[in-house]
Amino acid sequence: MTISKAACIGGGVIGAGWVARLALNGIDVAVYDPDPEASRKVGEVMKGARRAYKRMAAGGLPKEGKITYARTIAEAVKGADFIQESVPERLDLKHKVLAGIDAHAPADALIGSSTSGIKPTDMQSALKRPERLVVAHPFNPVYLLPLVEIVGGEATSPAFIARAREAYASIGMKPVVIRKEIEAFVGDRLLEAMWREALWLIKDGICSVEELDDIMRYSFGLRWAQMGMFQVYRIAGGEAGMRHFMAQFGPCLSWPWTKLMDVPEFNDELVDLIAEQSDEQSGRWSIRELEKIRDDNLVAIMEALSKENKGKGWGAGALHRDYVRQLAGAADKPAKAGKKAAKTGNADAPAAKAKVVKAKTKSADSKSAKAQKKAGKSAKPAKAKKA
Ligand SMILES: NC(=O)c1ccc[n+]([C@@H]2O[C@H](COP(=O)([O-])OP(=O)(O)OC[C@H]3O[C@@H](n4cnc5c(N)ncnc54)[C@H](O)[C@@H]3O)[C@@H](O)[C@H]2O)c1
Image (cartoon, rainbow, N blue to C red):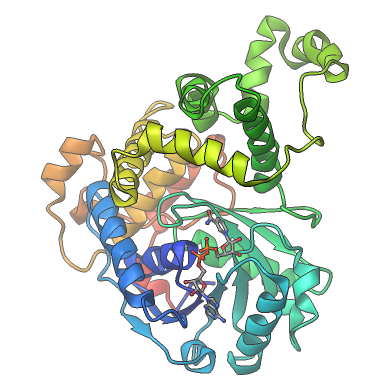
């Protein structure tokens, strides 16, 4: 499935990120958000996203999709084949909003919920056509980070899971379908574990928030960006690999190395402690400045990874490489690519020669080379693929 017309219900941090990814892929988006400030807030996110895409899209970009603001959910979802719900994380509100979407959207439109942790089955009771609802959980900033966890509920049909894979891949994302639905899925379950530990470490005065961030970003944070946990630990086992690693660190499981289920009391004292240390660490930058720094760093990391593995790209870098080519293939005018491509090192992606790499649902590193070869032969511009 490629997306012809999208609707975003909720235009906050995450909703605006979706609007940006869709519009920058050339797709028209209708937004519904009752906040009178919504269009200004989406506009701010769009500014940041345009800046990031201009920097990374060596071969040019499609003509930006049109963003319109609807007065009701019904108006927003009219004629849309892709709908993304990103309203606050409250089950009663999700029910109300999803019921409204379901009642007014075209019967075969795909509905994705951005929820961070609510099981799709718990939301499906509000829908008359629950088979088309999936959780599509993204990571902030949605316009740059490619991962989206796709989770089906008891009533979701396999056909809509397949459509979701295709739809999110078609806008440069890496969909991973979660095999069984659980609260918080995989990403947030891992992040929640780290967050709990982090709160304890600060509360107990073991380190400051800045020291904790340094411990992360100067060490395993760098490892995680290019290999996940298991590939990294396999290497940490030395020549004997994973079995040796597990034998060595297995006994720690019964030592007091974690306080995971024993959560610190959430009170004003804890909030003040964390917020004051965070101000000390980062108060000299505004949130918009921090967003720019974050976006520049993320693009730099993905670009660096896109040149690894003998130029085929590695992990998120392989997908990034394909995505930059896809955007170039759909560019509405020849890009000033020569100069930019040379600057970014993506010398193989000048606009004149750019081919769309068909968005892959499996972009394992080993498959990337094959996909690129194929793309060179058979790719069509993304616009032409639209329904
Ligand atoms: N912030 C994150 O890092 C993150 C990451 C992944 C997923 N999520 C999930 O995304 C969803 C949205 O989170 P967020 O961080 O963008 O929150 P947010 O508070 O920034 O945005 C929510 C938006 O929804 C709007 N809204 C409220 N009621 C509405 C209604 N009835 N119809 C339409 N819009 C309505 C609000 O005006 C607001 O603009 C949540 O389910 C959250 O769990 C958040």
